[in-house]
Image (cartoon, rainbow, N blue to C red; front, side, top):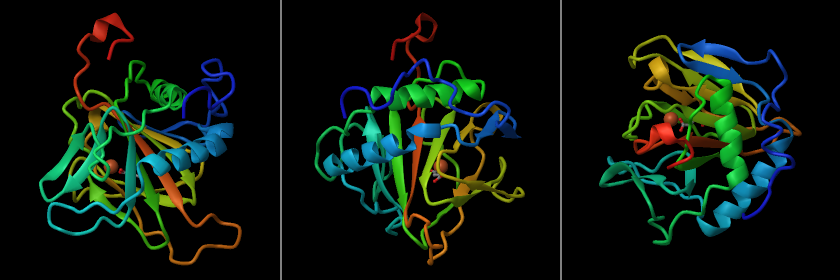
Length: 233
Ligand code: SIN
Ligand code: FE2
């Protein structure tokens, strides 16, 4: 996972076709195809990460196994168990630090954030979700991060899925947005705490369709100590 995954980054910071980005809410953008030609490299990276930090179905604080299997890369990883939802520097399955966030993947995540209007995004955590047929993610808020001024950046790979995009309140109307391999979604600012989820993936795949969906969400967890000096974590 060291070295260059992608060619010519950061010069190629706009793999997205011009004009394709569209707002889905205040401070939130859907960037269809943003990942462009990097999808295969990212899928290979996910496989390499999962050899060090395997996908697992974590337990919710209420003792239910999550429908989606998860792993992480980066300085911090999101975990859940009987003690609650939180970030950890180490993988509870191996007691090892999470695999590092590859520099090229961080560059691409920062480019997506910048394209959505968040130029100073410095992710510390990348949660990787794997959706098998029938799996889902119920409506929830991402609110385990201390720094809510940073956006969430999400990349979709593999099988398509329906993103459920609600509002600030759990009962707000929910839009359904198809996310395809290569799409990015960024939400922050006024929509940082909006409810969102993934509708259950059909149990049967269409012919030619990949069976699994992967999603990466890049998160800033702690406050940037030296925000004005740039480049400092
Ligand atoms: C999440 O909310 O953590 C995942 C969203 C997705 O899978 O697209
Ligand atoms: Fe989420």
